[in-house]
Length: 309
Image: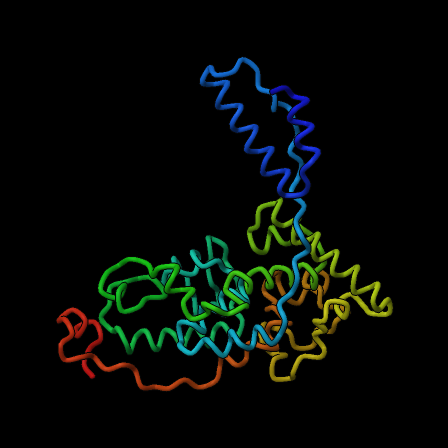
């Protein structure tokens, strides 16, 4: 097989299929040359090209509503808020420690990045910490999120348990995280440097979000050229319910002055996801206070962890 044979075969392929086959051929022939099976690599110096990603699309409100309705425990509600407001990954949520939460100063450290805590996240944090204290008052586990299995030790909760409440929903934790970052890119402007600073994204990932936001803004501008910057994204802050205007220090910020760095009223990333915030107040609805009772046949360590009834 010669270089011309590889190029002729590549012309018959398109898109991701072409890239996958070229990568496989380059890897195969490189291994064959290292092993002494061939003397010349016919696929060397053939460019694979850049992956053409599709434009990221925002989540529909009804999908978010269904995920909010599925979060029926204090832990599930907190996890959903961490993903939807702070764009935290599942593994980052699972490894959060109690020391990462500074209630007094309203600060939360996620993946070594300190983020301000909005009112919604604060209320959900306090609700979870109260539930945690009542359910496992004697646990020695310093992770923020624990369950029946991890309360008896010091390990973190599994990713499967973190994802559990939203399993089967279209608005999964990963989709909520992506939607949060996409909303930041559309609301603050498609600036990859801002995204990298706020969320700690890799430069290529930040560029992908910026390109998707730019495409969405251009599409919205073509549909209605009279719309302003925020109106084209469907996240006009002035239309938020007055009850929500206090959340995250947003009172008095208009669409014309809502870009956090220019307005100087909030720090980058401290403004909660305004579009998602229209769906998230359902997380504050009352939950039943009846915790599962400790079974009589439970082990001594479980009875000690949960304390007296």
